Image 1 (cartoon, helix red, strand yellow):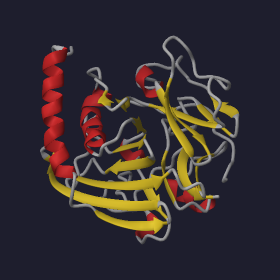
Image 2 (cartoon, helix red, strand yellow):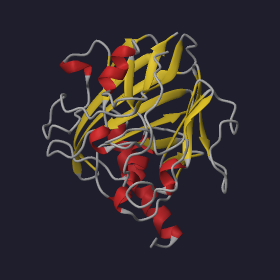
Image 3 (cartoon, rainbow, N blue to C red):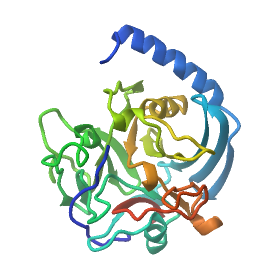
Image 4 (cartoon, rainbow, N blue to C red):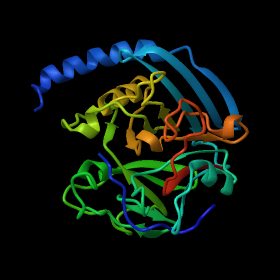
Length: 295
């Protein structure tokens, strides 16, 4: 497993109608999205137990959307999910993937773009390498960015939710690797309602994942004329339409990057936007990444 240590600190992360009306409208929206996303994907096996799927929608959520998916069969015990991080410099997802000799990689959780380090809880190889920085608020920390986590032990992956009134801690869960993020999008096969906030309601590139018998990594391109990106509510509908029983949002915007070994264009299949162009070259340097690897 590729491993360095970790940078210090954080990244800026950025009325509700009647519940019955909200749920009725939500289910109607999900039904429409489900019909759109159930077919038309181009899929190929990139390694035994690992598939890459792609589809471009001319109009999904009334906007163009370019979406890449990596599906991992968690029943394949020769695979493992790992967290790569660095304690001295920021790196691109490509660098994390290459250094780790990974099959595929996506960006991880929220971090400080200047000095690095996760704003959310991060535990690697049984050691808590970053705590929750809830003393930082507003644009530096939002409580719902740290409400759930991906817990990892080799090829065993579980979505976990932090108990109310508690903090993440090294011994809270018996998993060697835990990376927290948020908001939680889908839980127990139901979409989780979100509060109104610019972070949730603005269309950005988004990265996320889910787990049942498979791990599904999803990267939606955004911030471009060719692909608008999605809101948090739209992202949740997408996961639900993909038959996900649980789903969690990870860092998005310019951080959204999906890297696949053996692919052309710098092996980046998404369209990261830090170069202000719709190509595969505009990667943002990040503090950590989630790797798909072979044991």
